[in-house]
Image (cartoon, rainbow, N blue to C red; front, side, top):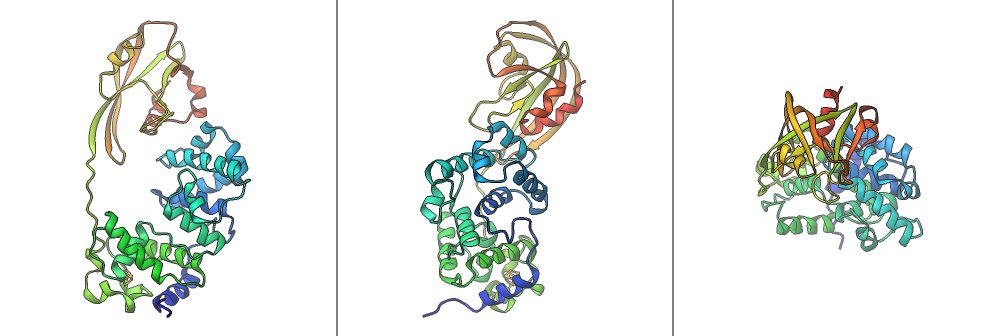
Length: 343
Ligand code: SF4
């Protein structure tokens, strides 16, 4: 029995007329689709387009990405945030080269085994590049389906995702699965938008349960549990004879392996520098601003500082740089904003 509902045809017809023109659409290159899907997570499509073009210029193939230096890869991502996405893309490309002879795998299990590739990305690549009937369920799809089928479960919970995931798996058409997934993404981005869905222009309004029941605005249900922690971060611009002291953050945790000015997150910056043998005198106030991460809010206060005393043998994660070299470094998010205050 064919359980594919009629609204899927309406959606595909709407997609043919209204789909967004995106640089990676039409090419069917699985690598392009992989990159675009990872890049578009947590980033608006309009904002990521120039990054995508630049990325493909720098790393046009899986092989070239696999062979690239990590710092170059992270620098190409600078401004998009969530840098583990860039690092994982490179590691995933290396796995494709080492384990799959340079060919992006065509089955879900292998695809999901690649670093940084989850169920959504695997579904998107397999359906769009290889025309396989594989769902790609992200926040957009959860929202659209929660409204279409009037699902009142928490879409952030495992159970809520499972409920909607099984409806998607049942209702996905056999014909044009890649277009169907992209049509859902476009509908979620342009019509069935988060706060105020545009039901009056929606091609699915006659099939939508939430629209019929007047619950569209209340859906989806999202119960957010994470708390954002406020942290005061003291930063110093410590210059000596035309060189600035910088620190490479550890290769785990927030902003890993990226460069920052000397900073104190849980301790004062004076104590932190003193622990590596540098005594400083803090000078004039420079600036302050707030930067919000997913679980943390940094309240940054920056000061000038000068060296009173220092050891010659700094730990290897601390180095002196000229300002002219700054553009070659991957900067730890908000620290990049402080460059303009260096002489
Ligand atoms: Fe979303 Fe409204 Fe369309 Fe239903 S009718 S899918 S709530 S935009």
